[in-house]
Length: 367
Image (tube, rainbow, N blue to C red; front, side, top):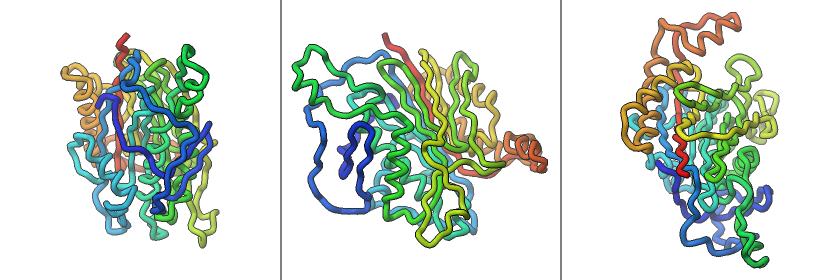
């Protein structure tokens, strides 16, 4: 899907120069929106040298007897957004992302695209909490904020009058600031009692080709260039199989029973992209089961098969998820998860059954 995603205006959301001010999305007050900047957008966004083509795919792990699944009803704000996001992609598996979730959003004035993945921490099942609610709500708020921010500095025409330049809408939103705002949105959400999630947020600037990211936990992303992996986001873990995680505690729970990391602990990264680069964002259902060279090989095969960039990006996502599902059921081969377990002195053979979510982006420089 080429960047150019359009969504309706965002209600009950106000942000200015990186300040997060929002109400719980479960509140139904139909009060008018007051923006700090107000202006009419240009009839057509300016042409930019970079375009990004997206695909997304996911697969929930097989249902378990212990799984607590109390989803947002489809008539709630987050539930409606969840169903719309899942319905945009030609995913060949199913409509359930399990405890994972993701988003892709065009940012202000088509200045770029923001996207991300989140993996709800399954340990909350023991406390009677559905882990998917935190991840979905975190991605929902990241999507909301991304639509109002710019991928870089707001673009102001120096030939305009001062009053016109002052009316430029929006502000620069970094992935770190987006993560911080989204997290506070979850903390204020009344329909989410508790939970934890990892998160990986990425922004792509359509004017400069700059990628910026903010990653907390063991979700992550990979950059492929000329059939080689040039960067892979290192995971953040407290110890084996315990990732950094954003957390919301219920009032009656002692915080020490779960880890509670903060957005400012997220790893930041920035690089300049080139024409033909491929970005793969993923949850640990992929990284625990598929080695990096295999991901690169899958993308190379799909790229050589031809077709539009949109079709290739979606095919890459589908094929990667399909292969991850095969690997997680393999009991005889070494997996990334079993290799890490061995380094910790633990014996574990084969793949790890888990939810898996993948978002792919293909970069094209048009000028």
